[in-house]
Length: 171
Image (cartoon, rainbow, N blue to C red):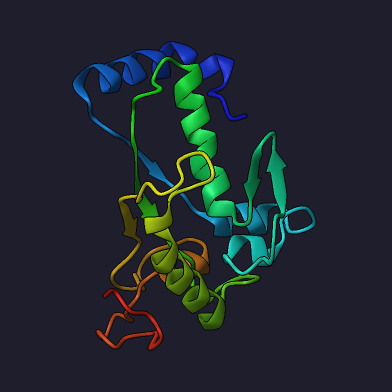
């Protein structure tokens, strides 16, 4: 049931129209981590990490087992409401920090990346079976970034080029 806010419609509607006319996708940054830490009382960690068993959130006929799909489908609904039903979404950034704040652990980041990679070819409840072009943020930790400590730890590799996770496969 997502939609773009009334205050943004003067900006987003022409953009959506342009994307629909040209066949270009909307690039969206999807970070379930930030949604989770912003509301941990109402957003379950297993929902954010793709590990929930069964439906966690029901939106009409659509049943959601992970937050990533719920966010992507909210954008699809917003695009439809703005006249862009044919506009595709590319997830231009997604990731999970490995240290710095609550739930930012190597285990959680590893779980998120592994499950995301295994999931993106399945589509979402709104677009089942439709693979999602998705890009991970980031290749390397950025030890000079900030101010939040988590901002330095989204990489798949540390600044010295050492891999942080050994259970992630890209094949």
